[in-house]
Amino acid sequence: MAYDRLNDPSAYRVQGRSFFGDYGRSVAPSDTVDLDPYAKAVIVTVAGSLSYIPVKNDDDDIIVFPSVPIGFIPPHTIRRVLLTGTTATVVTIDDN
Image 1 (cartoon, rainbow, N blue to C red):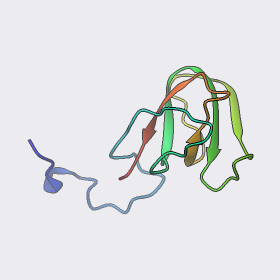
Image 2: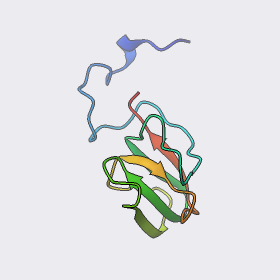
Image 3: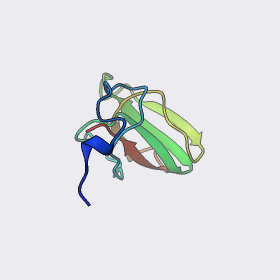
């Protein structure tokens, strides 16, 4: 069955960071390639360390969480999940 906007109670809301996403995808960490599109958020599905660059940070302005549990959602929109320093597995939360 195809998507029906009339059956989606969130279809007419204003999108924002405080809302859950409508899409998700697996993340392949990379030290050089940004997510396309940038992720509204990521959620940890396998515990470990997480190293990433928020959307407005420079490439060398990295955030590191050395030990994150399953279900952890970092407090930033994410531009890149780094291969170096990441042992956790993450998926995105996306609006479109």
